[in-house]
Length: 212
Image (cartoon, rainbow, N blue to C red; front, top):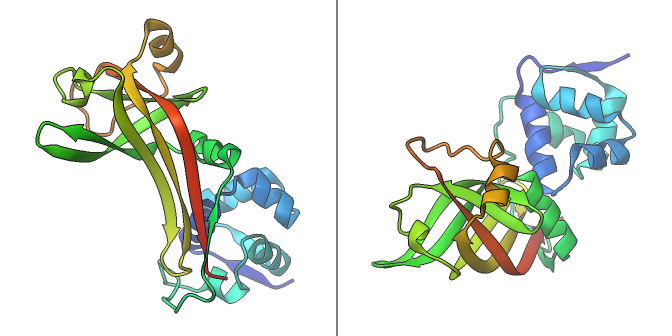
């Protein structure tokens, strides 16, 4: 039987990036392809030898040709003009699923010197988006102030991706909320960031762009 061997994690990385750009979970890709979920997770995280049948199934599940899926030594899909691009609204349930699956987003709020946009590590608790910051940061001084949280993923080669926007207010997290998420959010920035803030959504919207 013909096999395709990945000598590094390039193929798995490309499969993972394409799956995320489509907003799919490993379970959904498994269902589309007819492969086991743990097989998808193995392929995405470790060098793996794929059968020809697996490559065909994965390419169909990810809406790519086998050639695009397996192109060697190419971190990105070659740029090509978009074909009949379509911008589609996403349902709230899909937006929430994407937020729950992520861990890094952006917040935007009105600072003393103008609009501030910064990346944050976060986790979710029900509808809440919770992140940590320094106690003397500008956003930590807010209580029920307007804030926007944004999350996205794009495939520049395929000219497609998605973006989710949460419009709401930010406030200090209460003790029960802090206890519930204590081990689930760890800022990459380091330092003392022991102030937990919660974003209460007022509106959650999302859009997906497709060019195929």
